[in-house]
Length: 337
Length: 153
Ligand code: SF4
Ligand code: SF4
Ligand code: SF4
Image 1: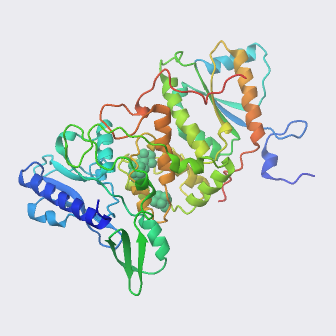
Image 2 (image 1 turned 180 degrees about the horizontal axis):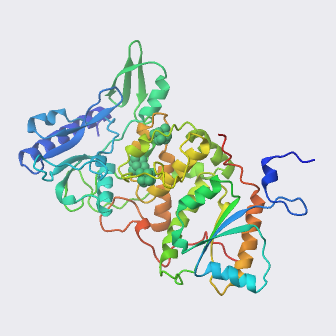
Image 3 (image 1 turned 60 degrees about the vertical axis):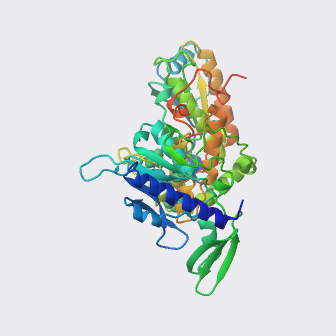
Protein backbone atom coordinates (compact mmCIF):
# COMPACT_ATOMS: atom_id res chain seq x y z
CA UNK A 1 0.00 0.00 0.00
CA UNK A 2 1.05 3.53 -0.61
CA UNK A 3 1.67 6.23 1.92
CA UNK A 4 -0.96 8.11 3.87
CA UNK A 5 -1.00 10.94 1.36
CA UNK A 6 -1.99 8.71 -1.53
CA UNK A 7 -4.39 6.71 0.64
CA UNK A 8 -6.17 9.95 1.46
CA UNK A 9 -6.38 10.80 -2.22
CA UNK A 10 -7.93 7.41 -2.98
CA UNK A 11 -10.44 7.70 -0.17
CA UNK A 12 -11.40 11.22 -1.20
CA UNK A 13 -11.86 10.24 -4.83
CA UNK A 14 -14.05 7.32 -3.92
CA UNK A 15 -16.17 9.48 -1.60
CA UNK A 16 -16.68 12.01 -4.39
CA UNK A 17 -17.53 9.40 -6.95
CA UNK A 18 -19.98 7.51 -4.75
CA UNK A 19 -21.62 10.73 -3.63
CA UNK A 20 -21.99 11.91 -7.20
CA UNK A 21 -23.54 8.61 -8.26
CA UNK A 22 -25.98 8.55 -5.37
CA UNK A 23 -27.16 12.08 -6.12
CA UNK A 24 -27.34 11.50 -9.84
CA UNK A 25 -29.35 8.31 -9.47
CA UNK A 26 -31.63 10.12 -7.00
CA UNK A 27 -30.92 7.45 -4.42
CA UNK A 28 -30.42 10.14 -1.84
CA UNK A 29 -31.54 13.76 -1.50
CA UNK A 30 -28.66 15.00 0.58
CA UNK A 31 -25.12 13.92 1.33
CA UNK A 32 -23.54 14.62 4.69
CA UNK A 33 -19.78 14.67 4.50
CA UNK A 34 -16.66 16.55 5.45
CA UNK A 35 -15.27 19.65 3.85
CA UNK A 36 -12.40 22.02 4.53
CA UNK A 37 -12.47 23.46 8.00
CA UNK A 38 -12.54 27.18 8.70
CA UNK A 39 -9.46 26.94 10.89
CA UNK A 40 -6.36 24.79 10.50
CA UNK A 41 -6.31 21.34 12.15
CA UNK A 42 -9.99 20.84 11.55
CA UNK A 43 -12.65 19.92 9.06
CA UNK A 44 -16.27 20.97 8.80
CA UNK A 45 -19.36 18.95 8.18
CA UNK A 46 -21.10 19.81 4.92
CA UNK A 47 -24.55 19.10 3.50
CA UNK A 48 -24.61 18.65 -0.24
CA UNK A 49 -27.71 18.42 -2.40
CA UNK A 50 -26.36 19.10 -5.90
CA UNK A 51 -24.17 16.83 -7.96
CA UNK A 52 -21.76 19.57 -8.90
CA UNK A 53 -21.07 20.43 -5.28
CA UNK A 54 -19.66 17.02 -4.50
CA UNK A 55 -16.19 18.42 -5.25
CA UNK A 56 -16.34 20.09 -1.86
CA UNK A 57 -16.11 16.74 -0.13
CA UNK A 58 -12.75 15.78 1.27
CA UNK A 59 -10.88 13.35 3.46
CA UNK A 60 -7.87 14.57 5.41
CA UNK A 61 -7.40 12.67 8.69
CA UNK A 62 -8.95 15.59 10.53
CA UNK A 63 -12.50 14.44 9.96
CA UNK A 64 -12.98 13.82 13.65
CA UNK A 65 -16.66 14.73 13.94
CA UNK A 66 -18.97 11.74 14.08
CA UNK A 67 -21.46 12.59 11.33
CA UNK A 68 -24.05 10.27 12.87
CA UNK A 69 -24.59 13.12 15.31
CA UNK A 70 -26.52 14.96 12.58
CA UNK A 71 -29.09 12.20 12.49
CA UNK A 72 -29.29 11.73 16.24
CA UNK A 73 -32.71 12.74 17.55
CA UNK A 74 -31.57 15.81 19.43
CA UNK A 75 -30.58 17.52 16.20
CA UNK A 76 -33.61 18.38 14.03
CA UNK A 77 -34.05 15.68 11.44
CA UNK A 78 -33.66 16.36 7.78
CA UNK A 79 -36.88 17.33 6.02
CA UNK A 80 -37.49 19.13 2.75
CA UNK A 81 -39.76 22.19 2.29
CA UNK A 82 -42.86 20.04 2.11
CA UNK A 83 -41.91 18.35 5.31
CA UNK A 84 -41.05 15.11 3.56
CA UNK A 85 -38.29 13.10 5.13
CA UNK A 86 -35.14 13.27 3.05
CA UNK A 87 -33.10 10.30 2.05
CA UNK A 88 -29.62 10.79 3.42
CA UNK A 89 -26.24 9.65 2.19
CA UNK A 90 -23.63 9.86 4.87
CA UNK A 91 -19.87 9.54 4.59
CA UNK A 92 -19.13 6.74 7.01
CA UNK A 93 -15.85 5.75 8.52
CA UNK A 94 -16.13 2.71 10.76
CA UNK A 95 -17.23 4.52 13.89
CA UNK A 96 -19.83 6.63 12.05
CA UNK A 97 -21.30 3.39 10.75
CA UNK A 98 -21.27 1.89 14.22
CA UNK A 99 -22.97 4.97 15.66
CA UNK A 100 -25.71 4.82 13.02
CA UNK A 101 -26.29 1.14 13.68
CA UNK A 102 -26.44 1.67 17.40
CA UNK A 103 -28.86 4.56 16.98
CA UNK A 104 -31.03 2.22 14.94
CA UNK A 105 -30.80 -0.42 17.67
CA UNK A 106 -32.05 2.20 20.10
CA UNK A 107 -34.91 2.90 17.68
CA UNK A 108 -33.76 6.43 17.03
CA UNK A 109 -33.21 6.32 13.30
CA UNK A 110 -34.54 4.29 10.43
CA UNK A 111 -32.13 2.67 8.05
CA UNK A 112 -34.63 2.82 5.20
CA UNK A 113 -33.71 6.45 4.64
CA UNK A 114 -29.98 6.07 5.01
CA UNK A 115 -27.16 5.18 2.65
CA UNK A 116 -23.72 4.88 4.13
CA UNK A 117 -20.82 5.82 1.88
CA UNK A 118 -18.36 3.40 3.40
CA UNK A 119 -14.67 4.19 3.43
CA UNK A 120 -11.71 2.38 4.88
CA UNK A 121 -10.62 4.96 7.43
CA UNK A 122 -6.87 5.38 7.83
CA UNK A 123 -7.04 7.18 11.15
CA UNK A 124 -7.67 10.58 12.66
CA UNK A 125 -4.91 12.86 13.84
CA UNK A 126 -4.70 13.65 17.53
CA UNK A 127 -5.05 17.40 17.01
CA UNK A 128 -4.95 18.18 20.71
CA UNK A 129 -1.52 16.65 21.03
CA UNK A 130 -0.22 18.59 18.06
CA UNK A 131 -1.70 21.81 19.40
CA UNK A 132 -0.02 21.16 22.70
CA UNK A 133 3.37 20.67 21.09
CA UNK A 134 3.04 23.78 18.94
CA UNK A 135 2.12 25.73 22.04
CA UNK A 136 1.52 29.45 21.79
CA UNK A 137 2.53 29.75 18.16
CA UNK A 138 -0.24 30.19 15.62
CA UNK A 139 -0.90 27.35 13.22
CA UNK A 140 -1.79 28.56 9.73
CA UNK A 141 -1.80 25.41 7.68
CA UNK A 142 -1.64 21.67 8.06
CA UNK A 143 -1.14 19.03 5.45
CA UNK A 144 -0.11 15.42 4.98
CA UNK A 145 3.06 14.75 3.04
CA UNK A 146 3.97 11.12 2.54
CA UNK A 147 3.68 9.64 5.99
CA UNK A 148 4.12 12.87 7.95
CA UNK A 149 1.94 15.62 9.21
CA UNK A 150 3.25 19.04 8.25
CA UNK A 151 2.23 21.97 10.42
CA UNK A 152 3.06 25.45 9.17
CA UNK A 153 2.92 28.80 10.88
CA UNK A 154 4.26 32.29 10.16
CA UNK A 155 7.88 31.47 10.82
CA UNK A 156 8.00 27.79 11.57
CA UNK A 157 7.33 24.46 10.01
CA UNK A 158 7.16 21.26 11.98
CA UNK A 159 6.85 17.64 10.98
CA UNK A 160 5.15 14.94 12.99
CA UNK A 161 5.19 11.23 12.18
CA UNK A 162 1.64 10.21 11.30
CA UNK A 163 1.59 6.83 13.06
CA UNK A 164 2.59 8.30 16.36
CA UNK A 165 0.22 11.26 16.31
CA UNK A 166 -2.92 9.27 15.67
CA UNK A 167 -5.79 9.32 18.13
CA UNK A 168 -5.29 6.68 20.76
CA UNK A 169 -8.55 5.06 19.72
CA UNK A 170 -7.56 4.97 16.05
CA UNK A 171 -4.35 3.17 16.95
CA UNK A 172 -6.33 0.24 18.30
CA UNK A 173 -9.40 0.52 16.06
CA UNK A 174 -10.59 -2.75 14.58
CA UNK A 175 -13.62 -1.46 12.68
CA UNK A 176 -12.29 0.89 10.03
CA UNK A 177 -15.25 0.53 7.67
CA UNK A 178 -18.93 0.55 8.52
CA UNK A 179 -20.56 -2.86 9.01
CA UNK A 180 -23.07 -3.40 6.23
CA UNK A 181 -26.57 -3.73 7.64
CA UNK A 182 -29.75 -3.88 5.58
CA UNK A 183 -27.63 -3.38 2.44
CA UNK A 184 -27.44 0.27 3.24
CA UNK A 185 -23.72 0.57 2.66
CA UNK A 186 -21.93 1.36 -0.58
CA UNK A 187 -18.19 1.50 -1.10
CA UNK A 188 -15.91 -0.07 1.50
CA UNK A 189 -18.03 -2.02 3.97
CA UNK A 190 -17.57 -4.91 6.33
CA UNK A 191 -19.71 -7.99 5.94
CA UNK A 192 -20.49 -9.70 9.26
CA UNK A 193 -17.36 -8.47 11.01
CA UNK A 194 -16.01 -10.43 13.94
CA UNK A 195 -13.49 -8.51 15.96
CA UNK A 196 -10.88 -9.65 18.43
CA UNK A 197 -9.57 -7.15 20.90
CA UNK A 198 -7.08 -7.75 23.68
CA UNK A 199 -7.35 -4.30 25.30
CA UNK A 200 -3.62 -4.32 25.96
CA UNK A 201 -3.50 -0.55 25.57
CA UNK A 202 -5.20 0.02 28.91
CA UNK A 203 -3.62 -2.84 30.85
CA UNK A 204 -0.85 -0.52 32.04
CA UNK A 205 -3.36 1.80 33.62
CA UNK A 206 -5.41 -1.03 35.04
CA UNK A 207 -2.42 -2.48 36.85
CA UNK A 208 -1.93 0.73 38.84
CA UNK A 209 -3.04 0.87 42.44
CA UNK A 210 -6.27 2.51 43.41
CA UNK A 211 -4.41 5.54 44.70
CA UNK A 212 -2.34 5.95 41.54
CA UNK A 213 -5.44 5.71 39.39
CA UNK A 214 -7.19 8.31 41.49
CA UNK A 215 -4.27 10.68 41.23
CA UNK A 216 -4.11 10.24 37.47
CA UNK A 217 -7.84 10.66 36.96
CA UNK A 218 -7.88 13.67 39.22
CA UNK A 219 -4.95 15.31 37.46
CA UNK A 220 -6.41 14.69 34.04
CA UNK A 221 -10.00 15.66 34.68
CA UNK A 222 -9.26 18.66 36.91
CA UNK A 223 -8.70 20.76 33.81
CA UNK A 224 -12.32 20.23 32.75
CA UNK A 225 -14.30 23.47 32.54
CA UNK A 226 -17.64 21.70 32.17
CA UNK A 227 -18.19 23.19 28.73
CA UNK A 228 -19.93 19.93 27.69
CA UNK A 229 -18.42 19.99 24.21
CA UNK A 230 -17.71 16.29 24.69
CA UNK A 231 -21.39 15.68 25.30
CA UNK A 232 -22.62 17.86 22.45
CA UNK A 233 -20.45 16.11 19.90
CA UNK A 234 -21.34 12.61 21.03
CA UNK A 235 -23.88 10.83 18.82
CA UNK A 236 -25.04 8.82 21.83
CA UNK A 237 -25.68 11.83 24.07
CA UNK A 238 -29.00 12.73 22.51
CA UNK A 239 -30.99 13.16 25.75
CA UNK A 240 -33.40 16.08 25.69
CA UNK A 241 -32.30 16.97 29.16
CA UNK A 242 -28.90 15.84 30.28
CA UNK A 243 -28.58 14.94 33.96
CA UNK A 244 -26.15 17.79 34.57
CA UNK A 245 -28.64 20.34 33.26
CA UNK A 246 -31.50 18.93 35.24
CA UNK A 247 -32.65 21.09 38.11
CA UNK A 248 -35.50 19.13 39.59
CA UNK A 249 -33.85 17.61 41.48
CA UNK A 250 -30.34 18.94 41.15
CA UNK A 251 -28.39 15.72 41.37
CA UNK A 252 -24.94 17.13 41.12
CA UNK A 253 -23.33 20.53 41.53
CA UNK A 254 -22.50 22.60 38.50
CA UNK A 255 -19.18 23.98 39.68
CA UNK A 256 -15.72 23.04 38.53
CA UNK A 257 -14.83 21.74 41.95
CA UNK A 258 -13.35 18.30 41.38
CA UNK A 259 -16.22 16.53 43.12
CA UNK A 260 -18.65 17.93 40.59
CA UNK A 261 -16.36 17.24 37.66
CA UNK A 262 -16.07 13.69 38.88
CA UNK A 263 -19.84 13.35 39.08
CA UNK A 264 -20.19 14.51 35.48
CA UNK A 265 -17.55 12.26 34.03
CA UNK A 266 -18.41 9.23 36.08
CA UNK A 267 -22.10 9.35 35.27
CA UNK A 268 -21.45 10.20 31.67
CA UNK A 269 -19.33 7.06 31.50
CA UNK A 270 -22.13 5.05 33.10
CA UNK A 271 -24.57 6.33 30.50
CA UNK A 272 -22.30 5.40 27.65
CA UNK A 273 -21.46 1.88 28.72
CA UNK A 274 -22.45 -0.45 25.91
CA UNK A 275 -23.40 2.52 23.76
CA UNK A 276 -20.20 4.42 23.06
CA UNK A 277 -18.84 3.49 19.65
CA UNK A 278 -15.28 4.60 20.31
CA UNK A 279 -15.18 7.38 17.73
CA UNK A 280 -12.99 9.63 19.84
CA UNK A 281 -14.92 12.76 18.87
CA UNK A 282 -15.28 13.73 22.52
CA UNK A 283 -11.54 13.89 23.03
CA UNK A 284 -10.95 15.67 19.73
CA UNK A 285 -13.22 18.56 20.63
CA UNK A 286 -12.25 19.06 24.26
CA UNK A 287 -10.90 22.62 24.45
CA UNK A 288 -8.83 21.64 27.47
CA UNK A 289 -7.18 18.76 25.64
CA UNK A 290 -8.48 16.14 28.05
CA UNK A 291 -8.05 12.65 26.67
CA UNK A 292 -11.26 10.79 27.44
CA UNK A 293 -10.24 7.82 25.32
CA UNK A 294 -8.99 5.91 28.32
CA UNK A 295 -12.50 5.88 29.75
CA UNK A 296 -13.94 5.00 26.37
CA UNK A 297 -11.69 1.99 26.07
CA UNK A 298 -12.54 0.81 29.55
CA UNK A 299 -16.24 0.99 28.73
CA UNK A 300 -15.68 -1.14 25.66
CA UNK A 301 -13.72 -3.60 27.71
CA UNK A 302 -16.28 -3.87 30.49
CA UNK A 303 -19.19 -4.63 28.18
CA UNK A 304 -17.09 -7.01 26.13
CA UNK A 305 -15.91 -8.98 29.13
CA UNK A 306 -19.10 -8.96 31.10
CA UNK A 307 -21.72 -9.20 28.41
CA UNK A 308 -19.74 -10.10 25.29
CA UNK A 309 -21.06 -7.06 23.47
CA UNK A 310 -19.56 -4.55 21.06
CA UNK A 311 -21.75 -1.61 20.21
CA UNK A 312 -22.85 -0.85 16.69
CA UNK A 313 -21.81 -4.06 14.98
CA UNK A 314 -25.20 -5.38 13.98
CA UNK A 315 -28.86 -4.53 14.43
CA UNK A 316 -29.97 -7.77 16.05
CA UNK A 317 -27.93 -8.09 19.24
CA UNK A 318 -29.68 -6.43 22.17
CA UNK A 319 -27.30 -4.09 24.03
CA UNK A 320 -26.45 -5.10 27.61
CA UNK A 321 -28.19 -2.19 29.27
CA UNK A 322 -31.44 -3.00 27.48
CA UNK A 323 -31.60 -6.57 28.67
CA UNK A 324 -30.50 -8.98 31.40
CA UNK A 325 -30.00 -12.63 31.93
CA UNK A 326 -30.42 -15.00 34.81
CA UNK A 327 -26.82 -16.16 34.47
CA UNK A 328 -25.01 -12.82 34.35
CA UNK A 329 -21.69 -12.86 36.17
CA UNK A 330 -22.02 -11.75 39.76
CA UNK A 331 -18.60 -12.24 41.26
CA UNK A 332 -18.86 -8.74 42.74
CA UNK A 333 -21.85 -9.55 44.95
CA UNK A 334 -20.96 -9.89 48.60
CA UNK A 335 -21.13 -13.39 49.98
CA UNK A 336 -20.71 -14.87 53.43
CA UNK A 337 -17.12 -15.97 54.02
CA UNK B 1 -8.65 18.63 74.05
CA UNK B 2 -9.53 17.48 70.56
CA UNK B 3 -9.49 20.02 67.81
CA UNK B 4 -12.70 20.36 65.96
CA UNK B 5 -11.97 18.74 62.66
CA UNK B 6 -14.21 17.25 60.08
CA UNK B 7 -13.43 13.97 61.73
CA UNK B 8 -15.10 14.97 64.95
CA UNK B 9 -18.33 15.03 63.04
CA UNK B 10 -17.91 11.34 62.42
CA UNK B 11 -19.42 8.83 64.72
CA UNK B 12 -17.25 7.80 67.69
CA UNK B 13 -17.62 4.77 69.83
CA UNK B 14 -16.48 4.44 73.41
CA UNK B 15 -12.94 3.46 72.45
CA UNK B 16 -12.75 6.67 70.49
CA UNK B 17 -12.16 4.55 67.47
CA UNK B 18 -13.40 5.77 64.12
CA UNK B 19 -16.59 4.13 62.91
CA UNK B 20 -17.76 4.31 59.31
CA UNK B 21 -21.18 5.47 58.26
CA UNK B 22 -22.76 3.37 55.60
CA UNK B 23 -25.83 4.24 53.57
CA UNK B 24 -27.83 1.09 52.93
CA UNK B 25 -30.52 0.79 50.29
CA UNK B 26 -32.74 -2.17 51.11
CA UNK B 27 -35.46 -3.44 48.86
CA UNK B 28 -38.89 -3.46 50.41
CA UNK B 29 -39.78 -7.08 49.73
CA UNK B 30 -36.73 -9.06 50.75
CA UNK B 31 -33.85 -7.25 52.37
CA UNK B 32 -35.87 -4.76 54.40
CA UNK B 33 -37.91 -7.67 55.74
CA UNK B 34 -34.66 -9.57 56.29
CA UNK B 35 -33.37 -6.69 58.38
CA UNK B 36 -36.62 -6.77 60.28
CA UNK B 37 -36.21 -10.45 60.95
CA UNK B 38 -32.67 -9.91 62.17
CA UNK B 39 -34.13 -7.29 64.51
CA UNK B 40 -36.98 -9.34 65.96
CA UNK B 41 -34.69 -12.35 66.27
CA UNK B 42 -32.32 -10.16 68.32
CA UNK B 43 -29.38 -10.94 66.08
CA UNK B 44 -26.62 -8.44 66.74
CA UNK B 45 -25.02 -6.47 63.95
CA UNK B 46 -23.04 -3.25 63.89
CA UNK B 47 -25.02 -0.01 64.05
CA UNK B 48 -23.14 1.58 61.16
CA UNK B 49 -25.79 1.37 58.50
CA UNK B 50 -28.49 3.94 57.87
CA UNK B 51 -31.33 2.39 55.96
CA UNK B 52 -33.23 3.78 53.01
CA UNK B 53 -36.12 1.60 51.94
CA UNK B 54 -36.59 1.34 48.18
CA UNK B 55 -39.26 -0.58 46.30
CA UNK B 56 -36.73 -2.73 44.47
CA UNK B 57 -32.98 -2.94 43.93
CA UNK B 58 -33.83 -2.08 40.33
CA UNK B 59 -34.83 1.36 41.62
CA UNK B 60 -31.21 2.13 42.38
CA UNK B 61 -29.94 4.70 39.98
CA UNK B 62 -26.14 4.98 39.89
CA UNK B 63 -26.72 8.64 40.82
CA UNK B 64 -27.79 7.53 44.30
CA UNK B 65 -24.50 5.80 44.86
CA UNK B 66 -22.28 8.51 43.40
CA UNK B 67 -24.22 11.16 45.28
CA UNK B 68 -23.82 9.28 48.56
CA UNK B 69 -20.07 9.10 48.06
CA UNK B 70 -19.86 12.78 47.13
CA UNK B 71 -21.86 13.65 50.22
CA UNK B 72 -19.27 11.96 52.37
CA UNK B 73 -20.76 8.59 53.22
CA UNK B 74 -17.93 6.19 53.93
CA UNK B 75 -19.70 3.34 52.23
CA UNK B 76 -22.80 2.44 50.27
CA UNK B 77 -24.63 -0.85 50.38
CA UNK B 78 -27.41 -2.08 48.13
CA UNK B 79 -29.31 -5.19 49.03
CA UNK B 80 -32.07 -6.87 47.06
CA UNK B 81 -33.88 -10.15 46.61
CA UNK B 82 -31.94 -13.14 45.29
CA UNK B 83 -32.05 -13.52 41.50
CA UNK B 84 -35.30 -15.20 40.62
CA UNK B 85 -37.04 -13.98 43.78
CA UNK B 86 -37.68 -10.39 42.76
CA UNK B 87 -41.14 -9.16 43.64
CA UNK B 88 -41.20 -7.49 40.23
CA UNK B 89 -39.68 -10.61 38.64
CA UNK B 90 -36.62 -9.07 37.02
CA UNK B 91 -35.84 -5.79 38.78
CA UNK B 92 -32.81 -7.23 40.50
CA UNK B 93 -31.46 -8.69 37.25
CA UNK B 94 -31.61 -5.26 35.64
CA UNK B 95 -29.92 -3.87 38.73
CA UNK B 96 -27.19 -6.49 38.60
CA UNK B 97 -26.15 -5.36 35.12
CA UNK B 98 -25.80 -1.81 36.35
CA UNK B 99 -23.91 -2.84 39.46
CA UNK B 100 -21.35 -4.82 37.48
CA UNK B 101 -20.52 -1.85 35.30
CA UNK B 102 -20.63 0.57 38.22
CA UNK B 103 -18.25 -1.51 40.29
CA UNK B 104 -15.76 -1.89 37.43
CA UNK B 105 -15.90 1.81 36.68
CA UNK B 106 -15.45 2.86 40.30
CA UNK B 107 -12.37 0.71 40.45
CA UNK B 108 -11.11 2.24 37.21
CA UNK B 109 -11.61 5.78 38.48
CA UNK B 110 -9.55 4.92 41.55
CA UNK B 111 -12.30 4.67 44.14
CA UNK B 112 -11.68 1.71 46.43
CA UNK B 113 -14.24 -0.80 45.14
CA UNK B 114 -14.97 -2.10 48.63
CA UNK B 115 -16.68 1.15 49.54
CA UNK B 116 -19.66 0.18 47.44
CA UNK B 117 -21.11 -3.24 48.10
CA UNK B 118 -23.99 -5.22 46.72
CA UNK B 119 -25.70 -8.19 48.30
CA UNK B 120 -28.76 -10.39 48.13
CA UNK B 121 -30.74 -11.22 51.26
CA UNK B 122 -34.23 -12.67 51.41
CA UNK B 123 -36.92 -11.98 53.98
CA UNK B 124 -36.09 -15.29 55.67
CA UNK B 125 -32.36 -14.60 55.96
CA UNK B 126 -32.06 -12.53 59.10
CA UNK B 127 -28.87 -14.32 60.02
CA UNK B 128 -27.31 -13.80 56.58
CA UNK B 129 -28.31 -10.15 56.69
CA UNK B 130 -26.48 -9.65 59.96
CA UNK B 131 -23.41 -11.54 58.77
CA UNK B 132 -23.15 -9.46 55.61
CA UNK B 133 -23.67 -6.20 57.45
CA UNK B 134 -20.79 -7.19 59.71
CA UNK B 135 -18.74 -7.92 56.63
CA UNK B 136 -19.51 -4.61 54.89
CA UNK B 137 -18.77 -2.68 58.04
CA UNK B 138 -15.44 -4.43 58.35
CA UNK B 139 -14.56 -3.79 54.71
CA UNK B 140 -15.43 -0.11 54.84
CA UNK B 141 -13.74 0.34 58.18
CA UNK B 142 -10.53 -1.06 56.78
CA UNK B 143 -10.60 1.60 54.09
CA UNK B 144 -10.86 4.49 56.51
CA UNK B 145 -12.91 7.66 56.13
CA UNK B 146 -14.04 8.74 52.69
CA UNK B 147 -11.97 11.85 52.14
CA UNK B 148 -11.71 11.91 48.37
CA UNK B 149 -14.68 14.13 47.88
CA UNK B 150 -14.22 17.04 50.21
CA UNK B 151 -15.68 19.99 48.38
CA UNK B 152 -13.45 23.02 48.50
CA UNK B 153 -16.13 25.53 47.75
S1 SF4 C 1 -18.33 8.98 24.21
FE1 SF4 C 1 -16.86 9.88 22.80
S2 SF4 C 1 -15.97 8.11 21.74
FE2 SF4 C 1 -17.89 7.41 22.68
S3 SF4 C 1 -19.46 7.68 21.09
FE3 SF4 C 1 -19.45 9.55 22.35
S4 SF4 C 1 -18.07 10.96 21.26
FE4 SF4 C 1 -17.67 8.90 20.46
S1 SF4 D 1 -24.21 12.55 29.68
FE1 SF4 D 1 -25.88 11.12 30.05
S2 SF4 D 1 -27.65 12.41 30.50
FE2 SF4 D 1 -26.12 13.71 29.52
S3 SF4 D 1 -26.66 13.68 27.34
FE3 SF4 D 1 -25.12 12.07 27.69
S4 SF4 D 1 -26.29 10.20 28.03
FE4 SF4 D 1 -27.69 11.95 28.31
S1 SF4 E 1 -15.06 18.95 26.44
FE1 SF4 E 1 -13.39 18.82 27.93
S2 SF4 E 1 -13.57 20.66 29.20
FE2 SF4 E 1 -15.52 20.41 28.09
S3 SF4 E 1 -16.82 19.26 29.52
FE3 SF4 E 1 -15.83 17.74 28.17
S4 SF4 E 1 -13.96 17.13 29.26
FE4 SF4 E 1 -14.71 19.01 30.22
